[in-house]
Amino acid sequence: QVQLMESGGGLVRAGGSLRLSCAASETLFLLDTMGWFRQPPGKQREFVATITKGGRIDYADSVQDRFTISRDNAKNTVYLHMNNLKPEDTAVYYCVADNEWHGGADEYDLWGQGTQVTVSS
Image (cartoon, rainbow, N blue to C red):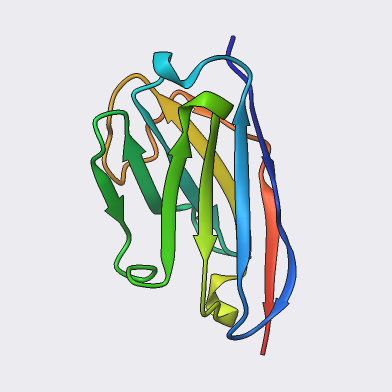
């Protein structure tokens, strides 16, 4: 069973940056799609970004042009670079992975435990 472990969350002021990392317990070659979802306080979980093995990248409109997703198969790791953070980006961020791309639907098979990102105004 592949396990996903997120890191890099924390507290940052509005306008600041953070980089989240998600390390998989085995080669990413076996995982077609990796990505990120988030759950703001008191709200439902929502799609953030995904990246496929073939290079397809998708972003939620709310993070387009501010967040960048990338993957390093040699390190079994996917990253989320978050710039110009806003208070509404405050959420628990979850890493996801699957052998299929499910778009923005939260139907991915594998989920990490989550890492908290808090953006102060």
